[in-house]
Length: 463
Image 1 (tube, rainbow, N blue to C red):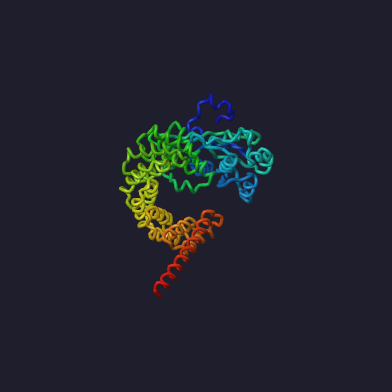
Image 2: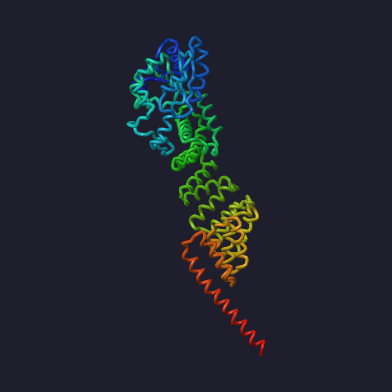
């Protein structure tokens, strides 16, 4: 243990066991109020929590686990040790407060690295510790042992210097190769995109920092390094830190260029940013490695569609459908691309396939109606819009287009009723009002024509 922090870089760090033994001796020797800061990983902290009571049985050791952000530490400590005999209080989880503060104060993840806010910004909890250090000393004659990651040491030095100056010791428990491998493997096994989505912003930042710390460990096994970068990319993508995610995938691919999933996930992230040309290139790399990846073909088709490259879009969806013929979305989106090319018969066939799989797809019924209208098949057009309206009765466009198709068939009263429905939903639709007006005139002429025709037939009959 070297209490002079400015000399840390000049000294060779102690071996892990030596640092641990230094901590043990200091805790055994110290009595009354004391502040110890122990730099370690979460896994090492849990090990310490188990080992210290066994190593120092003569002292009462308690553990205060903080699992969410707090504004001050005094009150939780007072409540926790009330009516308890405590000589040493181990505190784990203070970083949650700082993660929350950093997120609120626009701490950012750039290039895959979490950037902390300006040193001039001080979280309320650290201001409170600075201001209340005498109360801690006077009211709590116990040894406080803070267990946390390396970045928190500098956080305390720069933002809670008054409290930190009263330290009794700072210990760096260097991570052993075995622990590095165990921690890395644990994070990789726990890695799951859907689970990442459920994490709070603070938890996401914590996980990012965990992985970043392991990436700079000198004992990091080479075979796990690329996997950790990939996992960091997935986590950043879930945290909506897309540029950081791409940077992580790029680093992973420099080490392992044949990682199909990294190319694929990189494509997903680029697609989210609307960088469609790069998206397609990334999926192409994934497909060179795994040509039967349905998702890559499908997502590649989406990026091509966004660029208006409809022929290539259809070809990409066709590849996806060879692998997964029951992909409703691929059939539906393929129909959209065919519609853009004016290939209405094929468009209808593609929507029909989508509707076999998902009969309640309102958009497929509606767009199918549009393609039928382009072909002049008005009876079928109306039937398709009717199906769409069964699913979504407030679809203004379906009512409007249905009115137009009915008008083409001379069914003016029904057309007017359809325009009326459209106008209930969107009363300011100028075109619907105009078409309705024209249809009313046509209806009057139709009735007049029918009356004249009937009159002439009557006269002819009497003759």
